[in-house]
Image: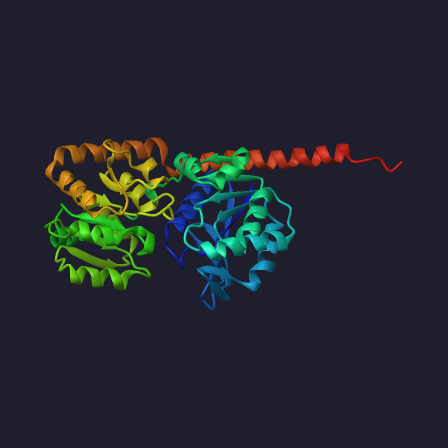
Length: 386
């Protein structure tokens, strides 16, 4: 079976949450016998065909962007060319250009779309995009929601409930690098082992302004790993609050991230808007057996982090509540450690890459068979020319 994944960004150009999910899914299904490839856009001017962790990555030049939506004229023909030779096309939503490519290619192959998130911020452009979006979602064979929480709270998915099922994200710890003792000691000397860790892109919906306010008037070390559009304003806010206990590390190699996840006391995940549909770095915290603090925004974050079991869940955009949660975990180390153990148990039960890959493989097979039966049915019912 051959599967083509199509998304606007991917390794090695970008290391975000969706890219990590696609990576885990491609590696996981490859182990199950699937020949999986990825088509994506790139700002690079060379090396358009790559091999990454045993699979092919096809890249086409990015021509321009509108509201973070990448467009590429070359992607139309490249997508049509690759799609002809696969058994399943696996789209990753949202990306309006992808919808256009789906229709312009005129390739009729079994198709599924992983619905990573509603479009939350671009409300005016969404009105223009709305008809195309619904045409696209109506045309694909199956839609996948990434958590039961998101399926229950998304007004868009509610319109396609008959063709939508839930497959949660999964991670494989084995593909993460293992930090050596020297690296662990280096980070331990710098931050100790009672620091809160945030890992992710520094974007508007991550709620990091709340985390900074929560850290004020405490001595709890807070380590922030990542870079992004709101980095400058966050650092300015930290200076205004005189936060000596908050450390911005920027983007780090994967091995350093693994070291910090190994050492941290707990994971802080203050995302306050529905643009945060799941929270891969929150799931990484569970995988490393850490207690977590997150907010209730009606998405997959609360499917990962169950209040009182794997960590604490507080109201969104409430810095005082977030601070109280941080202080509670610090003041109750035995309970925090228990929550961390239970977070890892929940990860092993629900969120492994193996489980995710097996579920998608079953879906691929089901959709292929469904499309085959529909074609045979149409052929059988075709009117006679005699």
